[in-house]
Length: 113
Length: 111
Image 1 (cartoon, rainbow over the protein chains, first blue to last red):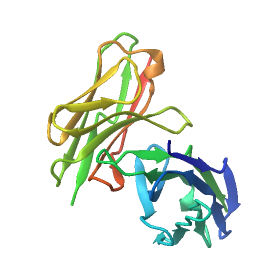
Image 2: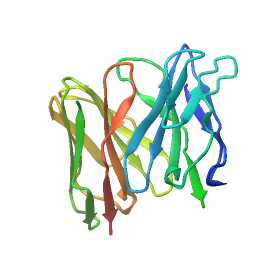
Image 3: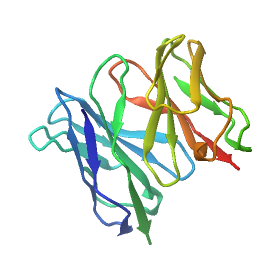
Image 4: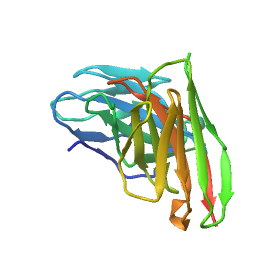
């Protein structure tokens, strides 16, 4: 079956530091890949997505590239802000009419001044 | 544009009481709908999904049930709550083969 593995958190960074959150996946075929962000007490928000190999998703300074050869979709940001503190989830859609997502366990990011 | 609503936002219920959480979607038709539960500090657990009116698929056996009485309405229910039912319940919708969009969630505390 499909699976998503994320790096363990929490990740603690100082403001303006470079962020990488690793995500690798196992899936048959050609899944679509997503990053979601969850702020405290809120639902998940779609941060970015990529639907085929070598696609780069980007939004709000965050980027992730769909690497089929390494089955990875690592999230990066060049300079984090305190407001980026949240839990980040990597997910894949392996296809099918039900469009079910397989989620990683989430990585908590804490950014300090 | 599409909007997803959930209510109530928070709920405190005694053990053994019934539960009804509601989710509605605006601005689209015939969406896929999903119920997730998130325990404190944990990941997401898919509970139910629906690809059409009256069509419910259960992912995890439990004392919860779901119904879809209308195209854009999804209800999560229980006849008797357990302590272990406490958590953050999220509703989501999608079109086929695409990403899911989440509601604001309902925080349920069972005492």
